[in-house]
Each structure stands twice: as structure tokens, then as C-alpha cells.
Image (cartoon, rainbow, N blue to C red; front, top):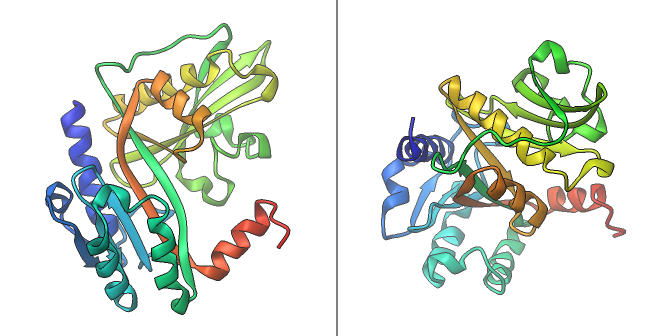
Length: 261
């Protein structure tokens, strides 16, 4: 396993998710493909997509339902590919989506380990490798990034940090697809800025690699704390995604996240 091999695996998985070929991400031209269900796709994805835009830095591939194909094609032709994830261009996209009661919803940056940088980092607290049996009682709000209650069956491995046997930090990974396991991490507020998150993330990433799988990490580009953890832990940006959802879905997300109207 090296950096080139991990990137190849990530592109192949994105190709499965988007119903395209891995070579499409290396083209100098943008691509539009029709989204289809696939049992090998990442488990948390809702397929087929309305539209999902993905870039590995060369172009943008848009995977979409037939009803949205003309919108996706028009959008990809209208702007330079690296501006397609930015405002004010997103306003242009949302205007086109209004008639179909949809809008741009999720936007995220995905990270892969850089094996030239990844190493087991330490913190002042004890850390322990945890199996499913060890963390089966930890599905609580304070560990909701590390473990996913809705998909318990996918959580496969974790690393915990302890202060006198009290759990103060937890990094967990979910078996989101056959070859790639996603890392999430939580640290109790009182214990933040002590190097716990990076210690747990780096150690868990190395355990994943030992098992022949590719660890990956995801965060919003504006979540600077999470970005900082990824960088400190030995990860580097690999690809970006933007997903179109129904307006009703976005409205419900806004309610959950505290919007008044």
C-alpha cells in the first residue's frame, strides 16, 4: 500500500458510487453520467443521485438522474471546473434547480493519508485500541462523529483516549465500502487542544492500513478544527463532492440544525 495505490482505490470507489469509470476523474474534460444503484457503493449514499459533483482536481464528474441531466450539463459548461463548487456560481445552479424543487445541499472535502507524513502521534493520555465489543455501549451524543447509531453494523474499529479510565476522546471507523473505512473523531470539550484527536486519528489510520484497507476522512472545508486535525494526523486533500438534494430534505436539515424558519 502506497499513496498512489490508495488514490487509485479511492477513484475506483468513486467510480462505483457515480456509475462512471475511474479514468473519467483524470480527464481534462468534465463528464456527465447517469446515476444508478450499486450494491458496492458507499453504504450511506442514497442512490440514484439527483446530481452529485465530484472532482479529484482535474475536472468535475457529475452523476445525475435523467431528469437532471440537462441542468448538470449546462452547469458544467458554464464555468471553469474549479469554480463549480463556489459562490456565486452555486446561485446559478440553484436557480436552475428551483423548478425541480431541489438545491445544492452537501459539500465536503475528503482526505487520504500521506504515508510520507502518517505516523503514530502521542498525547499525554493513555490510548487503547477498541473492538466492536469494547464500544458497543458508546452510542451516545458525545461520540456521534466517531460512531453512527443508525449504522452500528458498519462500525468496525475504534481508538479511545482515557483519563484515569474515563473515556475523553474516541476515533471510530465505519466499513462504508469494501476497501475504504471512514474515520470520525470526538473529544470532550474540556480535553480539546491537547493533541488527543490527532493521536487517535493517526493511530486508527495505521490500524486500518494494517488490515489492508484505505482510511479516509471527511469534513466541511469551513470546519477549520477538523481540517487542522486531518493535516496534523498526516492526511492530505484527495477529492471534493457536492450533492444536490430535494428542497424538502434541505429544509428539514436546516430545522435539525437550529434554523427558525
